[in-house]
Structure formats: structure tokens, C-alpha cells
Length: 435
Image (spheres, rainbow, N blue to C red):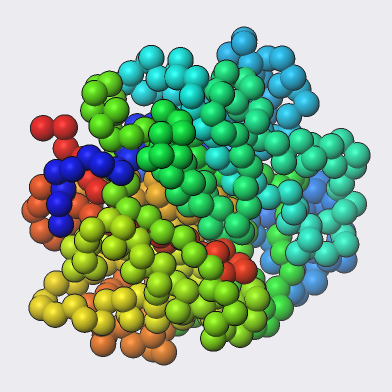
């Protein structure tokens, strides 16, 4: 592995989040480090205010859980005066992403980055409201204004470019749960082909009203108990949460030359699709597609799986999704010899499933781990699913906060995100030491 060349490497020079239980990076690290869960349980009164009928609330199959965002009202004011024009027509998703962009740029060491006009913007968005999954009672809370806001939420990236004067590509995209990693990979491709000099990559999912639950069906998509148990024997399904996050990217050689604060380095990436090979259906995940994506990303990074120190797994907490991911990872690590073991964990157990934002939550989580040289726990995990037979592999679920077991110059981590429809993505991150 060659860690000296800067060619085709991309530096993460800015970050910002708005996640359940975490309003900023410091709050996010606190949540991760101490293994906190940020899923809320709603009272009947809260649900009624959101338009859920008493009959549905009383039903045993209605689960009043979701990960929500605090203080959304604070995003109604433009982040600075020059962004005020047309700000009022933005839905809440656009407003939050505008604020996060301003926050990420404002906290960068090099203030001149804000004047880089040739900046690309790739944002994962989804105009499909959670009400699609929640039943007709949810529509009692929907009105024309919210429909308009949902329409404008589809043009988040162009609004960011308009507000900040960016003149590079400006694209909203959707690849289901892998959208935010897709945004990062597309941004890296533009940077490495010199089509832009800086990139904003992120995703946002904020469905209103927030205080709503979901309908549970046995052997369905959603959790039976209002919690996500990634890779655990008790995992019965997932639950959706709101969230937003983004990263600011530059070519590594430019970031070094510009004296940027470099949080971590993207040294390789890949994305592919399952096609129709050997899986149960269009929405189902595929072992071969995920395995191939992992192999391609590691080859692109110039590493072997044995070089990795950690895997940030997708870990959707669904029986089929978790099983597919573990089997693909076991296949990818099957030739590893020696005593080294490889920890993996999923942030979905902390936050709930933030959908198109889940990959961004994993990236930023992993960057914070690399900066702090520590592994955070995968919570709500007690008993490994026996079907996975993890004991037959060098992989294990990290359940405690711990330092990286080896002292190294650079730590390497893989980040996976998989979308319904077979859109697979994987990044390789490397720690960065200015010295």
C-alpha cells in the first residue's frame, strides 16, 4: 500500500450534522462515544397533535417511535444576509442544508474556501414522504403548504449554489439509502477529473410532522419494539428517523497547499448495482453486488482487506439486510490469515435509520473515530445472530468504546451504504496527521 502519493485522493476539510440527539459534531461524538440511543417515544397527545387518529394510536400494531430533530424553528432565518433572497420558499430540508453548508464553511481553517466559485454541490434528497409507509391517517396532517415545501425540497443543491455563489455542477440525486455516499463518490470523481475545485456532498431527510410512529407488521420492514438491533439475534426490523449532514471536499494536494484543516482522506471508493443476479427481488439486497463493491473500492484504494482497521457497516437491522451484509463481508475477508480481528458497528442502532442520510452519518462517525483514534460501540447488541456464524470469520461486532488496538501512522476504515434497488457504495477513509 502506497500512502505517500496524493494523486486521486480527496481531503475532507469541513463537516456539519443535524441528527437525532446531535445538533453538531461535538454532540454527535458524545452520543457515539457513550453509546447513546436517540430514538424518541411519543405520547398519545403528541401523536394526536401530528394528526394521528385515536383509533390508530390505540392499535397494538402502531409503534410510537422515531428519531427526530430538535429546534427546527431556528432554521427559518437565513444563515446570513446575502442568502435571504428566496429563502422563504425553501422547505425545511433546503433551509437546514443551507445552514449546514454555512456552518461547515464557517468552521474551516481556511476562510478563502468560501470564495471558491468552481464548487460542485451533490445532495441526496427524497421527495417520497414517510406517510407512504404510515397509512392514510397520516394525511390528516398534510396541507397545501407542506405539498409546496416538498416540491421545493427537490431542488436543494441548486438553491445552495444560488445562495453561496457556487458555479460548479449542482445536482440532487437519489439512490435510496446509499444516496449520501453516492453524492460523495460523484463529488470525488468531479474533483479528480478537475471539473471542480471544491465540492459539497451531503443528504437531508426531514419529514414533517416529526412526532409520528409507524405500523408494524410481523416479518415486515419495521421494528417490533421501537429500537434497531443491528446484527443482533433479536433484530426484527428498522425504523426511520430524520437527519441531515454534509462534508466539504477538496483534492488532497490542494488542501495541503491551502493549509486546510484535514479531518480525514478518502483514498478509494466504488459503487455498483446488483443487477438481477441471485437475489430475491428488486428491493432485496444482493451478496454478490455488495462483495464486488467492497473488492472494487479496496482495489481503487490500493489496499488489501487486511490493511483495514474498522468497518462502518450499513446495519439496517432487518433480517435479510443484515444477513446479506455479513455474508458479503465474510466472503470479502475469507482469505485473511493470522490473529488480527476486524471490528464493525452500525450507527443505525443509535439514530434509527436516517434513510438517504445514513451513509453520511456513517462517514462523519468514522471520521470522528479516526480523529480520536478510537472505536465506538454498536449499541442494542447482545447476542450475535447465530445464522451469521461470525465466529468463523475475523470480523466481530464492537460493543465497547475502545482505542484502536494497534498503534499506527495511519488508520484505515471502510464505510458501506446500501440502497434498495441494489445501489451499493463503499468508501475507504484514511486518518490524517498534519505532522
